[in-house]
Every structure is written in structure tokens, then in C-alpha cells.
Length: 336
Image (cartoon, rainbow, N blue to C red; front, side, top):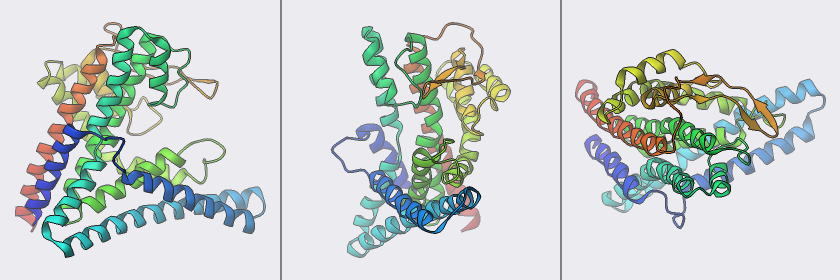
């Protein structure tokens, strides 16, 4: 059984590369977003009715944040599992179709590449206003005054960062879950954690307490995959004709140059492979936020670094799949 489930992961990966994330196809993450929004509203209403005082409110919001994360992740896991079980009752083929669909929809390699290419293509035309507009759909920073190099840096950074939580992590969780017959439920539990972080994991007044548990859970979920990327991306650089040693050495040196415990691993590995410097000052909600730089400026960043970063993402995702499937088969023979 596990062999077929692992084959499902490989098929889902190929489908993602071919089809990407078409806008017309309903995406399960939309349901997760709906669930988060409505659960948050219910929890906040309860706090408003029952809690008085700033100290008690802070404690109540943190408890509510923990409840929000547990409700959303558990519900997502159980709903996907129930859909799979219903499909299995109809026919084994229906089970695998559903399993493949959920895993495919959890992967974002082609979607990530497509969004980066959109900015790249507009940048090549010289339309800076449209380039800034397209970048604003990918990043949280303000983009209205960015120049060509700053726009390129934003695309490289978000592509490198999302190589982990959009591609490498889902593949790892899908493969690990498949060993126990729950690949799709496990990968969607991860997607729920990731979606929670993107919706409530902010350090602003509204979410600093309610979103704290979700943000830390997301950090924990990506902890090992991010460090795995610190080896995969240098290996991908070697395969792509770039420098393994520079990618790996910059990753080791700058892996902590980020407020996130995970983001600097893939970003530093990509910066080292390309020989560029990323990071630095960004504007958020009208305020300049100083961030440590990552990498060495061996040359000026170029718009051609966007397709190079996409290539590194593709190769590192393929290596994740290959290594993951081989490791899963070995583990299966040893343990099961």
C-alpha cells in the first residue's frame, strides 16, 4: 500500500509542474482561510463578552490563539481524512484520485515560478509601475517606490523563502504521511499551519497575542525542511553549474540573518549560489525596517537572477522528491 501512496506523491508533483494552480479550479486552502476567519471571529466575540482588563485579555487572546490553531489544523486533517475514506468506499481508484488531488493542490512549485515569471516578464519591458504592482501581490513590503534592483531582490527573496514552505516542506510531509497511509491529511495539516501563519501570524497589535501560537507552530513545522534546504539548494547550484561551495558557505555564515529561525537558510543558499546580496531595508506600513543583509555582493543583482532562482527551486524540489522517496522506501523495509 505504501508504495502506491508514494507513487501518488510523485504523480502529484508532476501534475503540479504541468498544471500549476489554475484560477478556475477550487482550492482547498480557500476553505482553510474561511475556517480561520470564522473561528477567529467566534473566539474574539467570546473574549469580548467574558474578559475584562488588559492583562486578562492578553492571556485570553493567547489561549484563543492556541484553540484557533488546534481547531483549524485538527478539522482540516479530519475532513481530508473523511473525504479519502468516503472515496475509498466507492473504489480504490477514487481514493488515489482524491489523494493525488490533495497532494497536488498542496504543492506550489509551478505557482511560485509562474508568479515570479510574471514580474520578470514585465520588468524586461521596463514597465516599472506594473512591476511594482505585480510584486506587491507576492510580498508584504511596500513596493510603490522600488527601483529595478529592489524589485528583483524582492522576487528572489520571496521565491527562495517559499521554496521551503511552498514546495520542500509539503513534499516532505506528504512522503512522511504516506508511510502511514495519511499523506494527504498530513500535508493538509501542514497547509493549515502555513495558512494560519499567513493570516494571523503577525507582530502587530491585533495579532501579537492571538497569532503567536500559530506563528511558532509554523516555525516548528518548517524547522527541519528549512535546514534540509541548506543542503539541497547548494547541491542544486552544483547541478545548475553554479558554485556549491559559495552557496553552502554563505548559508552557514548567514543562516541566522533573519528574524525567522528558518527563512535565512534558503535565502542565504540562493544568494551564495548567485553571488549577490539580498536583505537590507524594506518599508512596511510606512516605516523603514532594517534587516541584516544576506550574501556577498560579488556583482549587482540582475533581473536574470529571477529565472536562476526559479531554476534552483525546481532542482531542489526534484531532489527533495527523489531523496524523500528513496528514504521512505528504505525506512519501510527496515521498520514495517
